[in-house]
Image 1: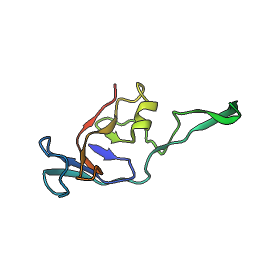
Image 2: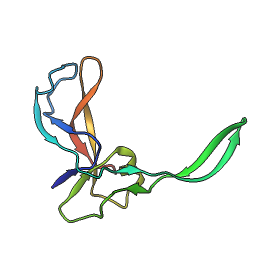
Image 3: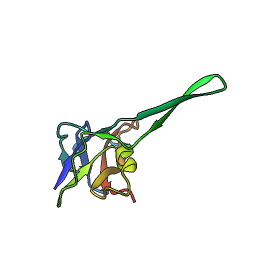
Length: 117
């Protein structure tokens, strides 16, 4: 089972679906509706330093809000930053891959999902 924990509908297209076409249905294989609550990283502020008199926040990533525990047979589609922050501890996290774009370059979906390694 694949569960979409991003904040948007994920459209999965056939691998031969061309870019630059505005028809959202052309080559559409499947959609994954988002499940609530969605997942996002919550940066943990550590301290502020100054570089050339500009404040630079030192933050720690890796604390995801609303990320469920791993379950057998379940993969979660999450934002890329969440998947990378939890690699290699979580092999059940997937991200969108091979974006599909309209004629103006807007991403409308993907051709596959990927597991960051």
